[in-house]
Length: 140
Image (tube, rainbow, N blue to C red):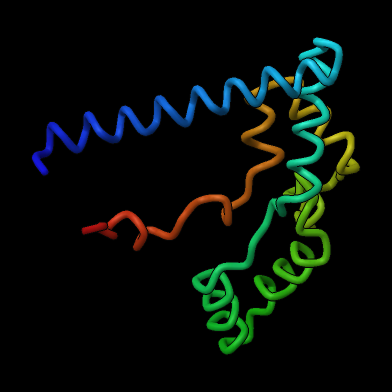
């Protein structure tokens, strides 16, 4: 298989899948009497309640272990806080003990939803990014 034929085949497969998905969404919206806005809100709510925001990864645990072995338990405490409520969509405020004026999670999330800039500062954490070693991985 040449590179061009692989690209063409992949494109055909994606197009087929996207068309099936589009038909599925249209049928789902019909079940909501054509109310796409409420349908989309419900879909997002279901996704957020079924998919954890935080998943413990080996490199994160290893970093916390290494720090703890050197007497710094801050990362372990931080992970415990995250793992207590892995489905919280805005967990940064909940674990940021240095914040003087801590907001409730609901306040943080509503503020974040109102502004894309706020989303970066309130609902993202250092654990949202892959480790630097991930950028050198190659799939063959």
